[in-house]
Length: 36
Image (tube, rainbow, N blue to C red):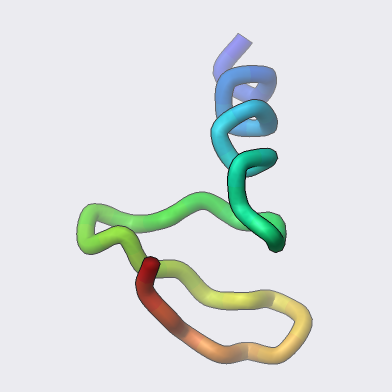
């Protein structure tokens, strides 16, 4: 169930990956850490 919620939440972004408490995350393809 949690995986389905995460999958839906990440679909809103142009790239995959959830955000941390600061609204940031690491792009696993490039290794870049950025915020939204």
